Image 1: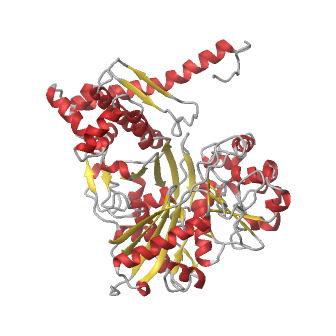
Image 2: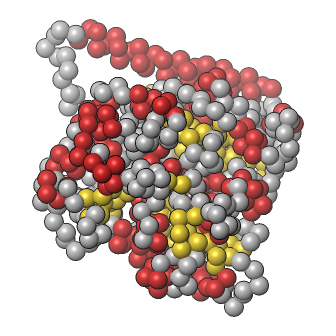
Image 3: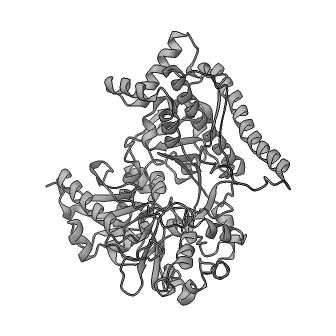
Amino acid sequence: MSSSQNHYIGIDVGTGSARACIIDSTGDIKALAAQNIKLWTPSSGYEGSHYEQSTTDIWNAICYCVKQVLAESKVDPNSVKGIGFDATCSLAVFTHDTNEPVPVTGPDFKNDGNDRNVILWLDHRPLAEADKINNTNHNLLRYVGGKMSVEMEIPKVLWLKNNMPPELFARCKFFDLTDALTYLATGKETRSFCSTVCKQGFVPVGVDGSVKGWQEDFYETIGLGDLVKDNFMRMGGVDGVNGSWMSAGELVGGLSEEAAQQLGLPAGIAIGSGVIDAYAGWIGTVGAKVKLSPDALDDSVAPNDVSQAFTRLAAVAGTSTCHLAMSKGPVFVPGVWGPYRDVLIPGYWMAEGGQSATGELMKHMLETHVAYDETLKEAEAAGKNIYDYLNEHLKEMAKKTNAPSISYLVRHFFFYGDLWGNRSPIADPNMRGAIIGMSNDKSKDGMALLYYSTMEFIALQTRQIVEAMNAAGHTIKSIFMSGSQCQNEILMDLIATACDMPVLIPRYVNAAVVHGAAMLGAKAASAKPDGTTEPLWDIMDRMSKPGKTVWSRGDPAEKKLLDAKYEIFLDQARTQQEYRKKVDAALKGSSLEGQEAN
């Protein structure tokens, strides 16, 4: 067994699986493991989609993954000095008197033996509760992008209050999932700023006159006044009074005897305060060792100074894409969540933009095309996935027609792809897709061009988000990608060219998030007797690996073409909203007003 140096474990809980990695003191990943987690989709007659999970099932999957990475790496468990967690921003519920999972499945809220005590982030059951919260226009909503999303956790707590038997709700205490995991690991009810500030409406003390973090008048107004009692004990309490709040990776406590036995590790290992999964992607990417030109750096500070983070947008890209940027002071951006103080580095602020569907959009546009099944068979026969196969086909099409670029092939095709609504920067869930230039082409060529136009849309919308953030006060000069989309060469090239800035791809393309979680373990392990820990940026600077840089192609003709298409893209977004208003105005007062389309 290898025990010559210290090791750290990262644990990442996504929507469909739990993952673990083990890294050494230089940040090299020694082993990776994954295990699927269960997802229940009950239909209980309530409005909105229901998605539920279980902390018991999730913890079992984590235990499996940790044992796997220990076995595969042959690392001595005694050399593991710290563990970090990240998870989706889902709501976990336990009893405050017996610490047992509380079922969240209505209408009877009985335990079916699966401990279904987690309402997943994408659960949309509290639509009415979210509307009620947003109609208060409370000042704290400024710090969640102006409106509290149905995917955040306070609407879910309010839904439980409105639907649970009162005596059961009175026994509940509430955690964000990552805080529930550090609780299961240590027995300590410490809360992370990342979870509570970003998803629960917690406003750090001193921000805008906040005294306790939790806003008592807000809770009273929305109907959760009973949670105010005992200084918000059931939400984690008040920092320094009856609760403890920490920034990313700060020491929560040691691994408990019970959890150590379940994980196959010695007790006492340092456990770091956790983060939401996308934020672990920021930690795992923006510190990458890269050679950037002076115009992509802040030349007033050292190349590895924490201030360089202000110039770097982390884009965590999978089914959807999350855009994260840090700033020294608060920057309010319309349609972008935040600004959030203290969530990663104390005293610094984060902003969170996003595209509702990117990977899912490409998948949808391909799978609904008539040529998809036949093309998929061709790709499989060639030993390639559908995306790599179509990328090669697009290059061949450009070559055959002597086109100056692939973009030239779709110069008169204008695709707008907000099929799932718009999160940033328009923040309008009613936005939809549009195509100008549609023909009767049902061929593989036609599908390939539609696929390219979809990637072009993703790139142009990324430019729109970056421009909105910079116009409000951010100083973004480069994009640090992570997630499965990094492997799509054409998409990365399009983003770099459309945004006219370098795109950085991490060494651990599919493990940047769990790698970031492991760095939280390293930070926790650095704790001194007084509780102070090594700065997170220093750990990122030391443990991050060299990345690959994708530069804008620098072809003036293609840049001119994409600039023109960007103007058209903005026009498509604006005219769609205008068309809706025009039709709504025409129907005002008629018998058709307010009717839902069949």
